[in-house]
Image (cartoon, rainbow, N blue to C red; front, side, top):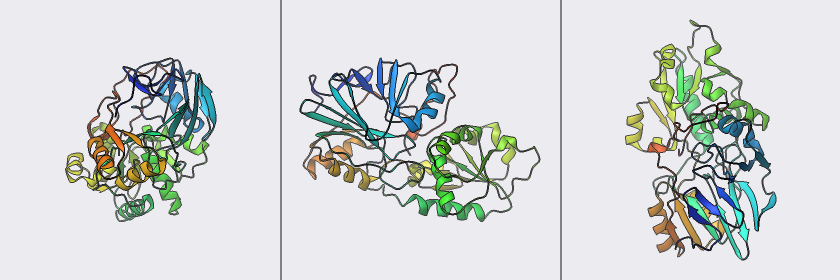
Length: 357
């Protein structure tokens, strides 16, 4: 089963295209109209004429793509029309402002899920099940070995790890958009009111979360502390790239950890070289993927990213669905990290973040 050339959705060199709307979903090249599932770098790219996205992601998108972009902010569940297509955005539970996009024209409807997760996350809206004839789903963690514990359980372990080292700093490497804020929000729900120190790339994205009403512990950029200030017993959140940068010189002797779904894989944990791995993902696990497909009611399923072949085969042979992998043209990125080498407008600030994990 492939996308027919005369159907509601089709693949073009610019990415997934809806002719009825004259718009692309998460285009890989500049286009006149872009519908964005969320603000991670492999989904939101600069240069398009106009963007449609959830309003809570506006601050991050303007930082990423430029303050002057033409942005149409939307609310979850809001119906609108572009051309002959009826469109609505629904929460994906991935990061702040993430969305699934439902498109309908004539007798055909498709749901483009973007990246999503089914676990509770105090830093963003929960996933909303949506029904459609066809579904495009990710499969970043599309193997039965991936089954997540709750974020609260994982961050409670992280809290213990931090508090068990009062004589030195604890540095947690986590992606600056989404994962860091989830860790902070989970810590706040566990009663943490102590100040957490942040790398500048993480601090730059705190304000949009506060504006959205997400409760976080107090934070401060590490750079604001005077040189020589004792960091013993302090928790510091930093993007993965900081691990091999001169920024770490100030944190000599710190215990280190890494929070990502990829920490479930022993080889990845070794390559990261972090002292402690915390399995915390902002993507659906195996059970979450199957649950989402079933709840969508879709009979046609296209699978992108990660373990697409495995999930598609399971859906065909066990669930009895028409399911195939779909190559969207999005560049593959090693070990789940978004590419940061794209050219950005002069008023945009690059953000270290995760593609998957």
